Amino acid sequence: MFRSAFVAVALLIFVPGSRALDLLRATATSGDPPSIPKVHCRCASYPNGTLCSWPQPAVSSPTHYIATYSERHRQSSTMMCNITSSGSSTPSPDSEQQWHCHLPNLKLLTDYIINITAVHSGGSSSYLAGFMLEDIVKPDPPVDVRVSAHKSRNVLVEWSPPPTWASHHIFPLKYQILYRWENQGSSISVNLGPIENTKIELKGLIPGRAYQFQVCAKELLGLGHCSSWSSPVNVIIPRKKT
Image 1 (cartoon, one colour):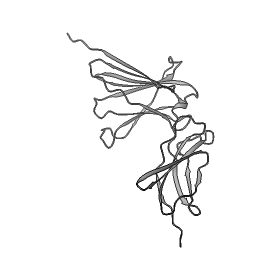
Image 2 (cartoon, rainbow, N blue to C red):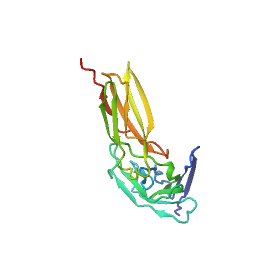
Image 3 (tube, rainbow, N blue to C red):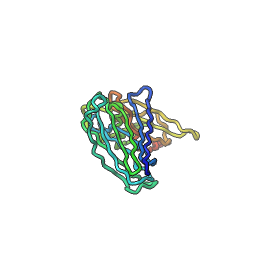
Image 4 (cartoon, one colour):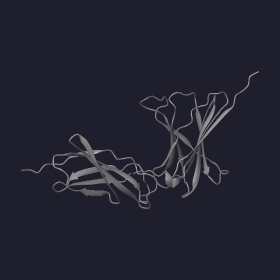
């Protein structure tokens, strides 16, 4: 007689100093469940730009995903999340398929639970995470970074806010500036900020030396995380004409 096997494994993770509470759960009906989705949630435009994403495993049976979310204290009212994909449908080392779940109209200062379940013929595996919108804020990097000589030994660094941050008049950003250079084989860096302006004059740089400049953005009140650094801009400080 055929007997179906059922296996359940649960792992509870609590991150000290954070409101995040993750529960990774795998269930199988034939001993070969799909891998647990590796989900990353980020709010790139506070408060209505939250996206949870995860990669398609490189080797897997045909798999479909179910995504739901709810307020932690109102789990009886569960909402479905519309899932979309990007990238190649045949993952390779150079291009992997990504799945995305957009979470619209999240409430401020409210705990949520997201549940991403991978399902195929061997069973199912789920990723559950508790989060608060304010903890996962991370803007996209600033764009159009420009560096120009400004007087002797000074440069003016200017940039534009990330275009994906839609409400910068209501929820302004602040910025940090990173610049670095090489000196006798060692890398030296200076991190300045935060500042609220979108330009800064840096003084006392050395003529003839090559510098690299980058900028990151963070929500003005300090919610969440600073963005990734902008694309680097390399500049050699001009020497004085004799």
